[in-house]
Image (tube, one colour):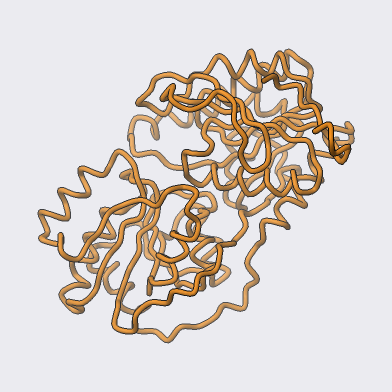
Length: 380
């Protein structure tokens, strides 16, 4: 399989530019970026846009070529296998061999985006970047982020366009990389989940903490606070929904606090959207006590299911709280503070927000318009 971005022969329906999407991670791996790319690509393909996906594989076990979200996928090897650096020289070489009108780079933290930007510049193909910024559990990685942005800024400034998934993210990168703020488009993630018929049993009091099992995601804070909630509500249950390297620490914390009968930890297969919907439909409260999120897909999915959400008052959560979409606790909140916030929400009657949730269709409208402008050379 090449990355020639050729339209399907039988259709003749391809409209707009030939688009190559570059992302360090994609299906069957799962997370916010993977969900975003799947939702956007599927809708672009449905509109007849010619899209291909270039991604990486640290395991060496995934097929080199595949189809996902209706688009061809090409995977190249990334190193190291157990770190999230994603050094993937194949990204560079595949782009040099490609034949596309515009390259859309998804994400900014790993080594894959700068390789893609360098290749695009050498090839003379315009590229846009959706930042998809996130936190990290390593204090060292967080400390060197400032130097990372300084080193990468020249490559980012050569992009033909930028997308932030929140106002916070757009402001942050405009400041850190000296990008023109008025040209950074704010395009939030959509809010959509398949509906299910299963409803929570009336007596069940389920709290769900959703996200990859990393320390910065704050699942340990949810567990600590839940120990306090359990004293008041012995029937309460906590479900940690996710997979990742912090699992042993979380399991040890559950055991140390004697919560093994009331806390469950486990992920949902990435393609099982109905499975995630069932969990959300049963939850009385969804929490994400992360130290950093730009515009979390998990929160948008919970809101789409009508669930109340408790998050940390930081980063991209701030504007969601300003719009009265979510409840927040301060980053320095204690277990007792978080438990009190959980209690208040659980005791409050369910209420619908008047704020209209963003849709994936609206997201794709904005992305497609930018891709068209860039391919036509009309971006200032």
